[in-house]
Image (tube, rainbow, N blue to C red; front, side):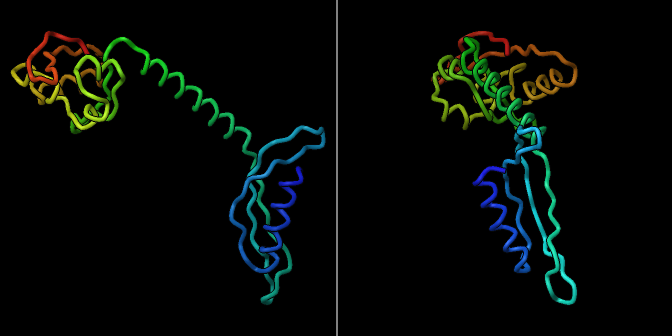
Length: 170
């Protein structure tokens, strides 16, 4: 156990000996083979006749959780890099409302909005609004794309100035 981890542990278990439950805390533990691992520790006093007679401590090895968290973080960074660097406009929409919840830089540039402005819009704000390019139809096509693994939606885009500027695939 590192000095910092030992200090944390001693302070926490003093509380337990005083009759208070120990909230979970993280420490680094050294194994017999000198390797270390991250753990979460929590403890509770064991009482008998109103007196603290011991401490129940639970130690959880966080190695797998840490590996999973690090892997997810790297995956999210890779996704974000691809998302942000794509030349195509990419929107992430709320499937229930059509509200835009994320968009890349190319989307802002293509449609003439700042990112902050884009995030206040929905599908209808960016389509021509004329059949077959209404919000209702766009929502139906998005749901179909999700449920049927069909990923091409076509529609007329509307620029910031309100004019239609051409057919796009989303």
